[in-house]
Length: 224
Ligand SMILES: NC(=O)c1ccc[n+]([C@@H]2O[C@H](COP(=O)([O-])OP(=O)(O)OC[C@H]3O[C@@H](n4cnc5c(N)ncnc54)[C@H](OP(=O)(O)O)[C@@H]3O)[C@@H](O)[C@H]2O)c1
Image (cartoon, rainbow, N blue to C red; front, side):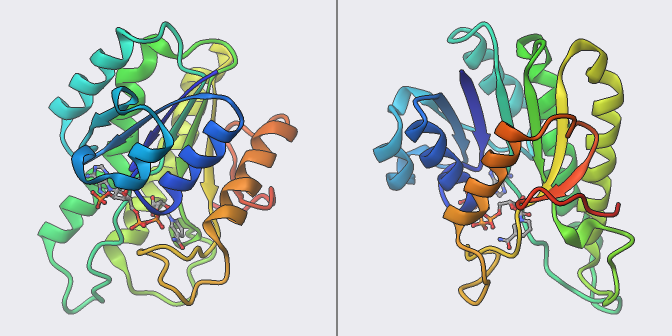
């Protein structure tokens, strides 16, 4: 089983690499600076680590072209790379931050999936790592405009990809990983990367009919 994880050098992405390679899967990972990705280099062979900036279409195209020379099929694509944006409220938000956050969190997963299409087949799964902060229904506190908008739009990416790809047997799901102890989640977050990724993997392994859904790492369906 071949897997590709974006943003595999730290946080949740690194944990995906760790747990999937522990399950004897063939794991490929993208990250912006492979030479500085010491932890990632200890987990998988360096030839399986690609220099990938998901906010750059040429970078995506180059990496997937390299991947195509290595595998004929991709079973699991984890669109994990993401940024929090500047968390600015209404008065201080800036267009540049919105554009960067949207490009990374929304268009990144969409275009990585687009270039992976020739490798996706019946039984393949695309996982978009979204966030409860992208839930329109759950927004009770405001703020964080660029992040919230980018993840709400990512949820639309997931649902739309599901509509387009499900007839080919390709599943697409949006996951909320929980509030997780990473650089983004901060040290006060209640959930470890280990528990979050183990939970999402369990859902992928055990739950049927998750395509087109927004679910958390415990397998509970969330409101859009
Ligand atoms: N932690 C949480 O509580 C939480 C909650 C909900 C959702 N999420 C989502 O979970 C995913 C992973 O977040 P995390 O908590 O693991 O955050 P993190 O520790 O900050 O890691 C983010 C990862 O994304 C990579 N990245 C950012 N921009 C990139 C780009 N343009 N191209 C390639 N890689 C890029 C980073 O690479 P560099 O090292 O090069 O910066 C890093 O590997 C994100 O999509 C995030 O929105 C996290």
